[in-house]
Image 1 (cartoon, rainbow, N blue to C red):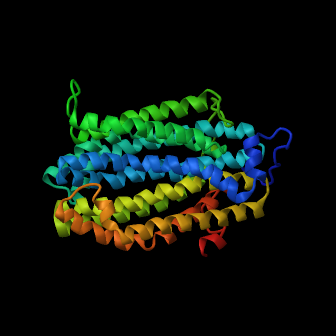
Image 2 (cartoon, one colour; image 1 turned 45 degrees about the vertical axis):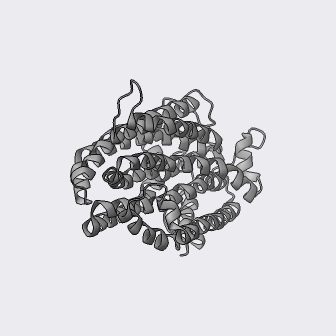
Length: 415
């Protein structure tokens, strides 16, 4: 039996335990969860704001450009959710369990395996979207100027997709050790750079040419490269509890990550497929103006996904570390507490969207057709957001023990 699959790991001795690991194992549940969650929620909202910032600036180019962004947005958000949420959860879970059981060598080895998985998936994602993007966007209803805008943005932003996958791998390694602050700082710095860089590249200034919608894509690539460099430096230079070390690749290590990340990816695919199919139906019924309205309204729901992922990452670290240390009852208490917090947060946002939809839509444009299509989306999707949010977070405790199957935490999953 390998070290990864050992059935009864011994917890690390208290005298040699890292203070951050000790907090995960013995700190008060709600204060510890909130302490870890706020910087991670900040970073997830910052990641989601990338699409919102770009949409706001692209909206100044007209409804066709906004419709083109709406066609690309589901795929871009799917990439972020897969790399940072599904596979990211698998990485954090594996490292948290290894550290909780005192297996430092395994935690170090998992860093390399995480980079290999996310690096290869990033390259695959780039190839698929760039190769099949034209057919995909046509199937979703793109035509004429909206299709041209979608391709101009998509070809650039997905050419740099591997950077998003790598920085989420590095961030997930740090979160698995309980370090939520460093990934937050790195991503927020990237978003801070995006705010001036996006309009500069879209509209041009002085010697910088106006690149239009493609400029928005280049802004994402540049800021992703910065974030990857900062987080990579933190992990590779040894400033993480789990450190990057060259080691032989082992199937057991890949399985430890993928048995969580691969199964969790199914939920992400389902969400994105639902949005993509609905986009195609809206396009068939109302054309580009309706796509712009639907896509803008639906961004609010996508904004809540990073919000609950912000709670999910510390839940994975907390539950995984406690499972590794044999503290099952404490892990269950943490899971139930996290689900309750997620319910309250998402219900608040959902009700606000249902009551005042025009306040959200008006941020991105004033086209009458867009404003007519968007409010029903905000109204109907806002009401059940609390159930969606708490259900999303109930999957995080199931990832932490090393699987996303029904055998784990049936009580907090409603089974």
